[in-house]
Image 1 (cartoon, rainbow, N blue to C red):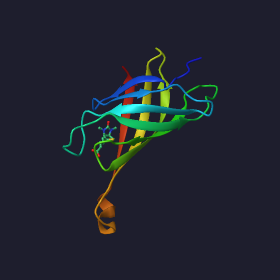
Image 2 (cartoon, helix red, strand yellow):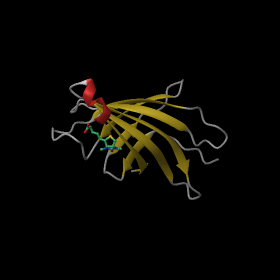
Image 3 (cartoon, protein in one colour):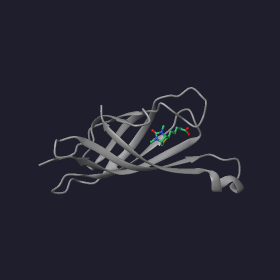
Image 4 (cartoon, rainbow, N blue to C red):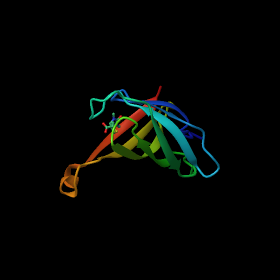
Length: 123
Ligand SMILES: CN1C(=O)N(C)[C@H]2CS[C@@H](CCCCC(=O)O)[C@H]21
């Protein structure tokens, strides 16, 4: 069956790379995220991520979520998505993300969250 495994090296169309670890017994995983672009002009650093996936159904195209703790910005991104395998066995991760940056005060809170979609393919 076309099972879609999260473990390994993935790249998105922004040129970001991420490495996902093997799963633990409860579907938890860790990894690291290296972004090519950022909203800050600080030195970009590889950043840790933690996530969890659902147990595979018959189709094995699992849903997951993970959080990236940026090491160079006062912000956090959470991703939710699903892993798909096409008829040729090509895997993609379809994701939606929320990027929350730290703002000076609650009155700025309205402009602190960005949303986007993103597709990762195996490197
Ligand atoms: C490069 N990115 C990427 O591969 N994304 C899927 C989006 C969602 S996380 C963001 C980068 C945020 C970097 C930290 C910051 O600038 O606050 C952007």
